[in-house]
Image (tube, rainbow, N blue to C red):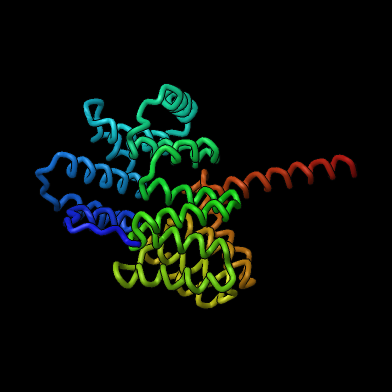
Length: 301
């Protein structure tokens, strides 16, 4: 049952733009809003700075969020610092562990979400889930769905999607979570996933996030030409989107394109998104292959 709320959500456009991956629109909408309620203004700023962060504009976040800023914004700044400074990550993780162990920020959804996002990037999914379980916010639930799918616990993802539907089944985040779940289940659910992404694009606008969702559905259905068209549109919108590049690498292999085509996307991914899970896995396999080849040559000498 959908949540009934007669109050106008002044931040709807800001939130919605962020959720569908339209980060510049989120920033533009946030900058246009004139709010008198300090809580709404803080929430608006949180989404705005997270949109800058998602667009890799780390400097804006680090420069504008100061030590005097509210704790919720400080949490966003920590995530920006983590993403922009690989050499600081060990210290940031140690500080985060201290905060978690002393229950600092436990009642703050933004802190829990940022902490979980850092653990997610570290592929420490247990720690991420421990953070998220402390909140019932739709955003925390949505990230839990992604994690459960990532660790092949589709059964738990299904429970989380159901929980989100009970909170607000019409919410954009709930629709996205249902689509991600459908992609994970596969089969006849793939078409349902495609329709959800398409409906969100029709109601709002096409974004790389939504187009990659459609492309994933096409790829799993073996509709390679359709996937190529959608991914080309995604590439035109954002030529450096990690998910678009990953899907293009996969598609190039399936279509039997010349090696230099997928190698070009791979090089771009390596240059701009070295910490992406696909890239980490690829580099690990590459190193293992090099090691095996060296061992083989040594044994044959």
